[in-house]
Amino acid sequence: MPAFNAAPHIRQSIQSVLAQTFDDWDLIVVDDGSTDETATVAGSFSDSRIRCMRRENGGQAAARNTGIVNTQGEFIAFLDADDLWLPEKLERQFEAARRTRADVVYCDGYVFFDNGDDERSDFFAVVPGLKDGSTMRQLLYQYNRIATLSAMVKRDVIESVGLFDESRLFQNCEDYELWLRLARAGRTFYGMSDKLMRYRRHESSTTHRDSKMLRPMIEVVKKHSDAVDEKTGRARIRGLYRDLITALIAEDDVAGARQAMREFATWDRAGMITQCQRILLRLFPRSFAKISRRCLYPIEWRLSRLL
Image (cartoon, rainbow, N blue to C red; front, side):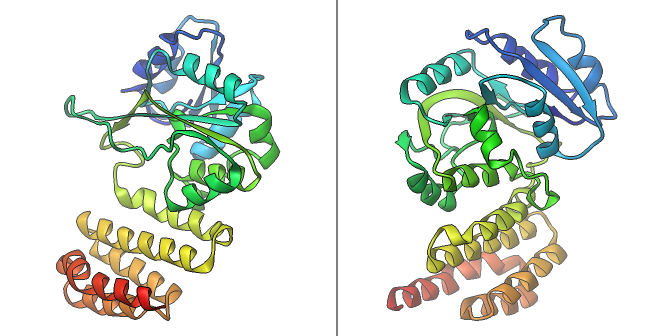
């Protein structure tokens, strides 16, 4: 459990581990240089299965790796300090891992919000059943279908590919990068349709702004673009850049959107629609998404059918 300034939520997250029907676990809470009461709250639990560690701030990937190398579990599961597991999460996943012999087991869940009890149950694109690495590589390249808190992974499998990549380039999407590496290494994945976790959305979350996820996601997809054919790879990257620009405009960061468009246009020099979008963003930033969706994307779709 990586934790950075997580005092408002970490107690509830730890309690969701204590409530597990499967009780043969160790919880490593890694305080990633917090400046609030995170360490005090985490250290207030008397259960001997809970250990707290502190390190200088290095990001989620580094904190998770610190936890991995300081535990001896056969399986590793992840829970951020603001999210929750439902009580049967570990028990059902452990049984599924034993039954299917999958290297990675992941599940479905809910999205919930701090400002009310509203929940979304259609957020995670889980593909149920057992999938080999080649199949999962294609599915993952289209979309990250594995929420970090939903995964249970064999320890030796994580170690075989080198743990999480700690580069800040992938910050907030380091899990996505790891899943793609595991798929490319030929590891097997088992998706469960069971809703066994709750993912919290709140304003202090690192992923509260869509742009915070889309920027590193572009870098992950670029890194693994050789895992698919060129047309598929370029379409995926092109779509993410456009989502990023739209998100930045929605977040009132027009300057950031224009910078992202410059990067996009440089990468996609041959894209006629992209160059039209660059002009559109310069002239009508607030209408960028609407005009692109209604006028430019239908043209691009027709052109793609001719190629």
